Image 1 (cartoon, rainbow, N blue to C red):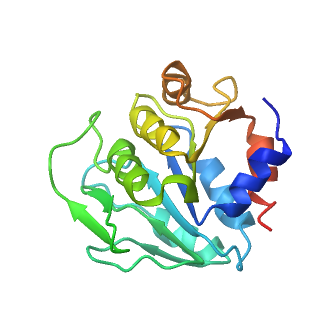
Image 2: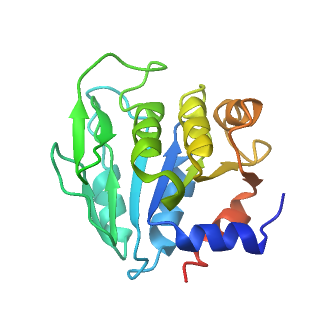
Length: 197
């Protein structure tokens, strides 16, 4: 399904952009960070699987290449517009109705902490139709169930074409659950996100 005016309009009306991915999604997320304009007027939340206790340069690399304010999430951080947040390793990130993040130390989901499902499910309760969520490459099913909750809440849910994903299981799992409003190529995703106004 290619981009159409309805999808573009729903993206433009969104206040929050959720980006989830695992193995094979880093390059795409890095490119997205670079192209998002400084005046996007949306909150961007990234949940990417990271190895437990593995020091990562992701935050530094993303921050240096972002035109928006960028930071790793801390417990009780207030959620601001025109900012990009990344979920920290070894915690699940939850979105609270009062407009702040909370970090949770419960068990891993799909062997992952942060879990995409956990964040997506909490976002579905808070943001509903005011949200766009995109699920990228990954080697397990994390994110598919959360994306379905978002879809059912009225969010715009997008899945990377599994044929283009380095690891197809994550996007394919979401498609199998009928969790996607649309399946887009990487190029179409970049094009959509640059249509911010």
